[in-house]
Image (tube, rainbow, N blue to C red; front, side):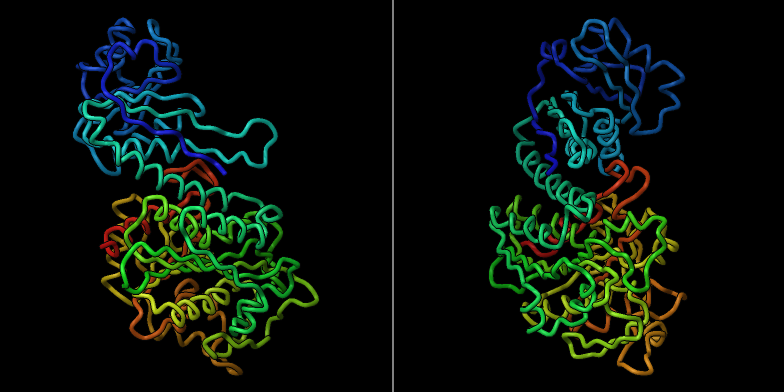
Length: 487
């Protein structure tokens, strides 16, 4: 698995700047340089101050950066000048960090951050962006260079380094899982990866097909009938709180989705290795909260299946019974994620009686048409929980947009032969999918459904990641838990 860059905060040492290897980063928003940046300017015979007076610096966006390569008088390969005002915090400071991480590669980085308010945001952005997935390539694996932040009060930031590391490890765990090809990340291997969380104090159970059949999870099992990979449900428990009911996270873990008998077009089907993105995010959140010792009770369940066409695969027109007891007419076998989630959601509520529940899934192409790749779709039956999540997502710079629910949409799911259909036609496709899941939420359970089909993996660079798996949602859900459920 990919390891985040080692992060440390150290005291200002002007003499160490000249001999620092790799890359040295300075911040500026005017034509005057002083402090550590001034030392860099002196060492480079005024190169920094000359750049600050140039049109190129004037045209830079806030948080953008330019490299001054092979600086005279320094051991570094480059001085990176980042345009950022000293008092900047939050998303703008994180994007400055992203610029640093993007340029770093495997080189060590020294960030001269004395006098900068958003030091923690810059550091988080840099660590998150210094990532590359190389597990399937021959040769040396990607290893990010160490990131050292020089600041006047490093001791005040020691705890921040641990928190940033915990969050980055969770995000990287998600990205590695989502980036992995399906012949590598089978349902069995996915479960094994999750069992590794036991080393961090997470209680992990793996339910096999016989146990799922006994529990009545027949809609989930129906999805995997055409695959040689066994279907599983993995239950993870983190008990960091007192005796309060746990907060529940539910993830769709379809390790590959052909569409089943309703087979997808060949073009682009290779991207369906990411159809376990919801389960990947859940895994990353659990790793993060365990690493930082969250003072909350959290239970996470993921349904791991593979949707393949086979002589045993479920057919359009089949009727299957859910764990809840509702019968489902399968109109389209490519609408399989909701069949996985509905059983796992019901089981989570029956067993754990959670105080709130969030499910995540790369569920519909319709949400991509509606919101593109900048926002996940947010559906909820509870304003307080939903607003808490939207606030957390906004603070973390992870795009999220609330979508409607309603009985008129649920009516599209009415079946002639069963209690409900698994699809309601093209109009409002992401909403009818959410309404299908809504049917399996018990009265009194605050619930959010996150459709992350557009944000889990992207063909272009995302907010904190290169193209490919983004790790979207780990930061937001970690913040939601920290702000709303820790004592």
